[in-house]
Image 1 (tube, rainbow, N blue to C red):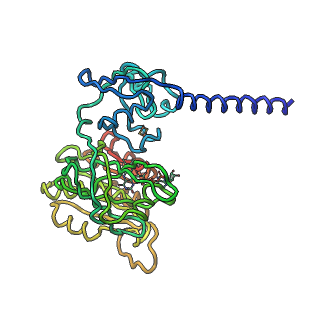
Image 2: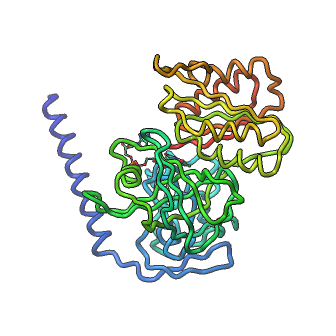
Image 3: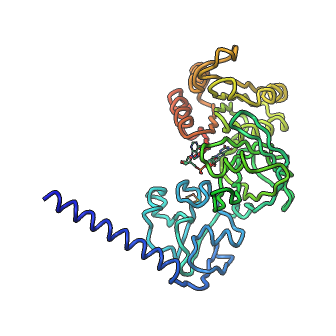
Length: 369
Ligand SMILES: Cc1cc2nc3c(=O)[nH]c(=O)nc-3n(C[C@H](O)[C@H](O)[C@H](O)COP(=O)(O)OP(=O)(O)OC[C@H]3O[C@@H](n4cnc5c(N)ncnc54)[C@H](O)[C@@H]3O)c2cc1C
Ligand code: FES
């Protein structure tokens, strides 16, 4: 009996798989949607060849929606209101949308195919996202696995962004990697430096983009990127700011702090930075300089597992430990939290902040996921 059930399940699964393959092949080679129109904000109309995703179709006309995963359908950043022509909600979109978003015609632009005329609405601010070509000015080791990558802008020659935002770097095919991919990297340089962008890129084992940056890219190479994107930025004017980050999560914080120094901002700022041991720490001298140039700024690095040879005199333990120690004796009613790094670090810091009385609406974060 069990054998028969198993066999039936196997046959149905195999038939579904064959059907899916046939559909993909038919879509690829037989479907011809011809030219279709995308009307944007009841104002502008694009003519595109039907069959590609909405994200790719807009990109082909140099209109860029935010995207952190490069169209893989995992980040959910490419949300877009599609008023007409989107077709039914796809299973790949559902996990990335809330009930309210589904009810208000929000869709995932990298998953929705443009097969018929479409009407969409996008925020005007997105027209400020451009494609840039740039030259690699500097590639420098910050630690054994984080590189500083400085890009000199060529075309267009300047970028206007808010400290905290990110760009999407596009790789070129290399070795066995035949495709170009796009990945998000926070801008580490200050917003007043419009002719270049600094990125801090941590090597992810077997990662396509980070291996390309760490092992293939050379000074003098030309690259392309799209930006600026993202909502991670400073809010308010006088509230105390508590920053927490780990690893390459340092990047947007450096940009924010340089802006604070340039503007001589007097609000109280404390930056908790977590690392494993001394070899994972970087920008210590820069932070000391920023402590001198920002009127009320303190940098608190913490090592979770210092090596005996590190001769570490500073804070020890996870970054959440130093953060909690500080928040427990601070007046949390006005504090704003700014967090950047892995989703694990962010979730842990949010928990500590909320438990100490920093409400969720005052916690801003940028998960590198
Ligand atoms: C808004 C935003 C800003 C970001 N800013 C930065 C930044 O300033 N600096 C920076 O170094 N990164 C940053 N990231 C992460 C970055 O976009 C890439 O995800 C990361 O560099 C890996 O890309 P990859 O192509 O090398 O790896 P992929 O080829 O995408 O992944 C290869 C494998 O590694 C896993 N993986 C992917 N990312 C990670 C990770 N971070 N840690 C462990 N495993 C991983 C994947 O699941 C996969 O199995 C940011 C991400 C976002 C969303
Ligand atoms: S670009 Fe990441 S989900 Fe669409």
